Length: 165
Image: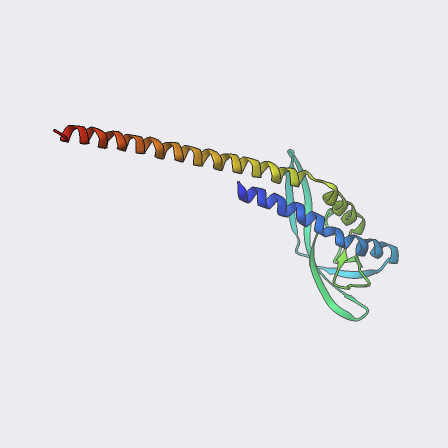
């Protein structure tokens, strides 16, 4: 349970840390810095059920070049199935290695993740449950050891009385 709490907290912290990419994503849109990405024809379709509703995304490998430098490569999850071997890709002019197929969607996702505290609350909840269960386990162990010691003391007292004349 401690690992669940730690995992939820790490996820919360990672979501907050992604906000450093927001200026890069906004600059991509403002500058309209677009390159052509060569998408690998082999992609992975991933289906996740959220509240019983299947949600699909597609993981693609891609490479691209900017102003003769590169090649840069990456793996991205797309909300729609790739339709061609070449796709427009936004890149950051300040860091060519940072890119996005859907910068608007990335901005929405990062903003939502940064403003949501649900993972933090889950972390706190799991931590409380873990501490309570640990306390319960230790209490049970202490009660067992006290009972065992009481039985041993009673047996020793009975033996002492039986052997003393």
